[in-house]
Image (cartoon, rainbow, N blue to C red; front, side, top):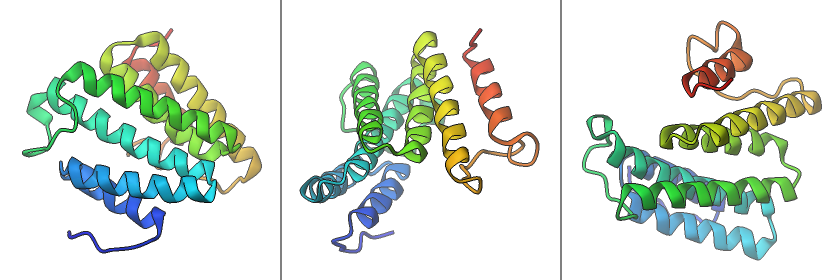
Length: 179
């Protein structure tokens, strides 16, 4: 997939996400920074949070490439130089996203940001922070459902067809394990 020029920051973040999933972090980071600048210029806190979250996901994937080499993306480009730096920067960006989403009262995006943060904390062995972040993700998910009963968030099979979100969170907390 090539990158098609767009002035729409959401398009830039979607393209960045695709590049991250293919291990192409350097062009992804450029697109994220461009999107972030547009959102900042427009005063869009939720958009700025989306950019921070995407950057956090990029660093989290880099961390996983270092930490779990047998499951790493093929020939990834890393924008951080060590496992510890990747984890630290991923957490920093995700926490920034959580803060921006909170300022924007965006419960939908907060659900995803806390979920991503919980998974990274879990991967790094920070059980307390992982468990807290799963609880926060679950809290925001249920707040979002109260605002809009049709609100959904992707959960992998078999959870999508049996138990949905609550079963997924229970499973993920069991993996940490949370008490």
